[in-house]
Length: 203
Length: 203
Image 1 (tube, each protein chain N blue to C red):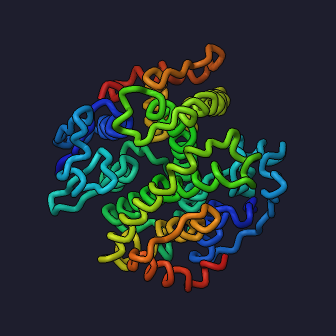
Image 2: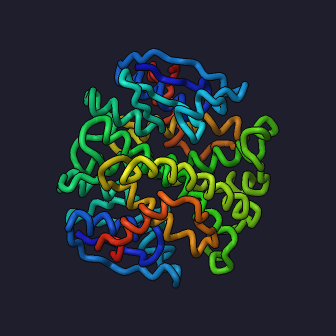
C-alpha cells in the first residue's frame, strides 16, 4: 500500500491528519504539486481528475478523494471512530463534514484559486470576480460554525471527528486566501486553538 | 419523522430517489422553493444554510444534506445497500459519489445558477463568466464518467449505488443548465437510459 501525497495542499493534509489521529502509518510517495507533477501522465493514469491524495492498494486498486480513503481506513480500523458512532451521530458527522467542505472550504478555496497570482496555471481560467464574491461567503459560513461551537466542544458535537479535520484545514487555508477571521468569532477561535494543539495538526 | 422536501431541485430529488430505492416511506412537508420558502425564518431555524432536504426526527433532531440523511437511513435499513458492501466497495462508492457531485454536478449547477435569468434572486451575485467556464468543465467530467461506464454497469462498479442517484440527477439537470450530452458518450447514454427506467427515477 502507498499514498501519493501532495504536501501542503488542503486535501493531502486532511488525509495525513486523519491517519495521524488513527495512528496508521502508510508509506508516502511525495508528488511535487508546485512543479505540477499531479498533472503528469503517471498521476493522470491513476486519477483522471488529477487530484491528490491517491491510495494504491497492494492489489493495484486505486482509491481517490481524501474522505473516501478515510472511510476505507475507518472500516478497517474503527477506533478511534472519526465518522461517528450510531446512525444519528454518523449522519451528524457527515452533515457537518459536508457543511464545512462544500460551503466553507469551497468558498475559501475559490477565493484562493481565482485571485492568487500563483494559481494562474492551476485554475484555468481564473475568474477574479468569482474569487472575490467568495470572501464574504466564507465569513458568513464561519459565523454558522461559530454558533455551532458556542454550544459544542467539536464541530459535529461532543466528539472529535473528520469534520474537525476538514474545519482545521479550512481555517488554516484562510491566510493564503487572504481572508481574516473576525475577532468576534470567539468560539471558533477557542476551537481552533484546541484542535491545533493536537499532535495530528502537525501531520 | 418528517422530511422537508423541495420539489424538482437536485438535492431533494436525490433524497426521494434514495428513499424509493430503499422502499422507505417518509411523510413529506412540501417547501415551495420557487416562492423562496427555503429562505423563510422557519426553514432557516432548522437549517442555517437554507438548503433542502431537511429531516426532522421525532425527538426534534435535525439532519440536513441529502447524503448525510441517506447515510442515516442506510444505517437503519442496510438493504438494499446503496453505499457499498465492505471496505473497498464502500470507499469506491464514496469516491464516485464525490467525483460526480463535486466535479460534474457542481459544474452543471454553477452553469445553471450563474447564467439562468430565473436564478438572479437565488445566486447573489450571479457571475456569468463563472457560469460559462463551467460548461466545458461539465463536458470534460462527463467524458471521465463515460470512460468508467465503458467497463462498468454502474458508475461505482457492478452494483447500483447512491453514486448512480447523484449521476442521474446531474444528467437530468443538464437541460436547464443548457449543456448538451455529446453524442459520442455512448456508455453514459446507455447507463442513463437504464437508470432512468427504474421506478425510483420518477420519485
